Length: 128
Length: 388
Ligand SMILES: [Zn+2]
Image (cartoon, each protein chain N blue to C red):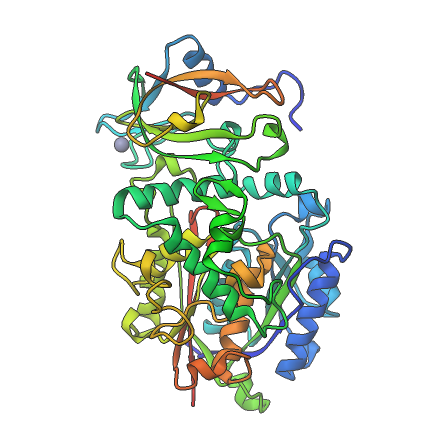
């Protein structure tokens, strides 16, 4: 296991920013989006990646309701997890809302929530 | 370039063997393959070994030398890891090395011990084939990722859970009589639809089981086979590999598996065949939706058409293009690191005529193995042909 206090540089900075309502993604000069940590655009090879504001809302592309989870989410089941489209990038997060309401095409906003099982923070979506 | 031949194959029973170590499982499969080949262990020049979760499940890294030792073989050995495609990529490297004259005799295989873990622990171990930062930390499980692919497929192309259920029913039917298979019993569409949900829309009976087991094949050069009177009518005539973004969120489309399309194109080109020449296939049906993506990527069906293939009877054993005559991962079982070479072992026996389902492919010449890692971020395809 990682020693206490050691962060995943890039990723944890991204989650910190998202928690402050200042989410971003990395954009190259050709308009490709990607997520940190990243040194090079996987689409075009550009190394000029600039932090660009993440749109406030995205749209659910696909989702599932998980009933059998890993130990880190044992007390969270059932929970919905979705991939949502924010234009230049897509994000994966949990929809901590009424499971029956989840469907493709819904508008969501990215947030940072917590696992009920471990209290660890995780990326979530709020229905808008 | 030399012709690469499959001289022998070996499999353990695939099933629940929680108390058997992976080294013991691999010894059984590897020794069976050497016996089947009739090749002297002193002639083995290398052991290429696939394993995925041994570091978690058995607290054992560096498994290559252990695998060679288990076979009583004194030769260099390397463990290959590409999630569920681990022994598929090991096989690809071995095929290239024999083809290029680097070796004349290689043992390739894999093993996995999974049932010594609790269900939640094995779920966690399988999940590490996904992107830890952006998928696993959000609660994406291995079934969860395929469930999102299934929903994306339904949204884009149509199809239903009932269509998927026919894949499971077909593969269970094929496994009846396969002594190596974990489940040798038929199931119904209703059984699938009424089984407990794992990750919606996928139920328990849409998923492969948690399996312990091992597989191995002995590859030899054509020259070695001729010089040593080794009977090896089956050749590996094409190998291909493709890759994709790890995380579903980073792919253009979640309803297709382009890594497998690329792997198939390369393997077909090497073998000088097209999808239309393929008589039957073993594909990576870790979940029912995975078989749909596979048969489309292999070029057997247009994109969006594969979902109905089992229901329409095209891919059943009596159909035009039987898929997973072994029972597939779904019914035969999926000891992750052993699956790639187990597919080739099954295809070899089907082509040689000593498989319980050989009667359904008695006139077949060309078969294909499709092995995928994770949500098909890795894909390996091999073409096998038989001299009749
Ligand atoms: Zn770019």
